[in-house]
Image (cartoon, rainbow, N blue to C red; front, side):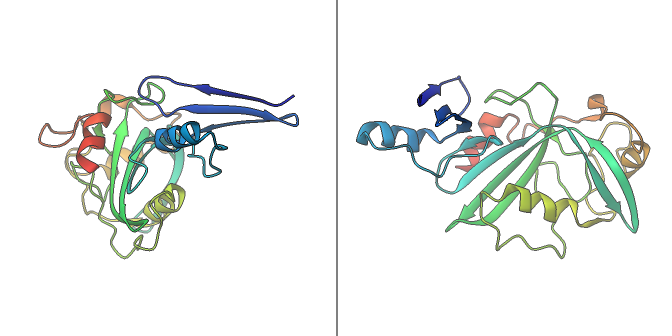
Length: 213
């Protein structure tokens, strides 16, 4: 028996759960695409939005949420294995479907963010207080704005130097790399190290979405 259920939760994209020929799928879809499908009485579009997407204008701006995880980091010429990181918010703005601007923020782990979720400075080198990233020799201009995995791979695959290392965590204001070195072998990222984004910039997910659209 085939079934389709659409769930609406405030601050999140609509969730579509479908059972077709015994196969169960669950995806989030943009509100625009959902409304178009309902009004036209057509089938739902095949290009469903990934679960990581938490805000979008369905045209040139996507904001992705990445839960806390572990990643290898390259500091100068030393690789730090499996460093625990906080939740991250990746905001991508583009033109003609390709990346034009990327911002990266940290989040405290309270699950999937909503419009009121506060933003924190990413505790990583090569980032600034307003979320901007210094890409160095890495190139993301050929990436599509929905290619969040490729964008993150370019960022975390680069070699972090002393650029953009200050004012990124509480205990090592001069150089966040000292904090990262101390996280080798740790189970989780210490969230009390996170610094809130200055009020000159968007301080919540909702404000970030409004300014980037």
